[in-house]
Image (cartoon, rainbow, N blue to C red; front, side):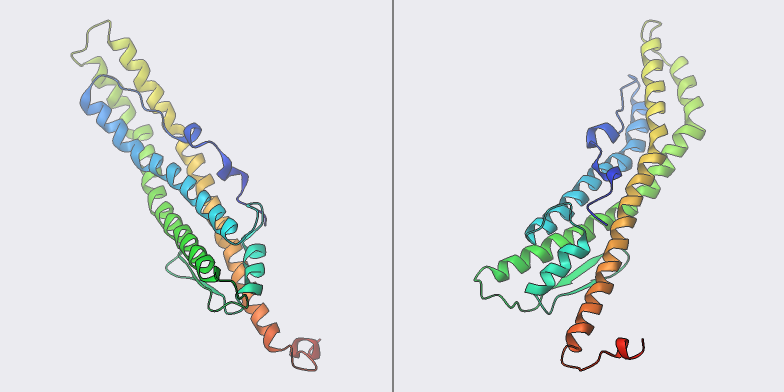
Length: 225
């Protein structure tokens, strides 16, 4: 698996809900409050993508390299490196000591740990935001939309203001239709990274086992073949 999936590469401005004012405060509040968790999730997706890129760059790798490729190469410099998952998509990296005698080794290790923890934090926040974002969008589309339209028609707006207010309300309602698809793409991004993470952990464990077997004449795996 290479870099982040294509669904994560979309423009943040393109995916965020663009809410227009209908000139009625309580209805504007309904739209803005419903859009808030989704727009926060879109921003968080960008933070997640940037954190993954930062981790790879801190390790001296291109952003297109997979997590497994990046970490296994770092393992050569940090033989005691350990990577594990806690509480869902929460990632913990321990580098231990390095073979390198570079004065910057500790700084490199600190940057790797910091960026890895940021990945975990943003992924965890995304998982929390998405259900609320989808639920609020569904509430607007399935329940509140007719009430909102009728409230505008019965409001104190002038005959000249009502058409513009209705147009903006309908535009807002239409915006919420894209929430389920984008939310599913964001969820897929986190899930794909989690899969890459698990493969990385398995590869690290295998590498550690192979290192311990280097002095043996025959690997137990080969003996059982």
